[in-house]
Image (cartoon, rainbow, N blue to C red):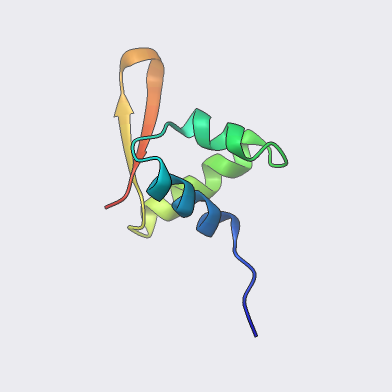
Length: 67
């Protein structure tokens, strides 16, 4: 039986396809989710070592990278 992909799986897939995308771009890619829900999942992926968050001082941009 196939498992259904999680939001985290979709985020990782998007970051693989678009390296160095911003948190805002990821949130816009999932209009069915609230921005905060995407942020919480991105933070969880970061804490688990699956994703790196790079904070840039220019307009407080957060760029996502794979480890």
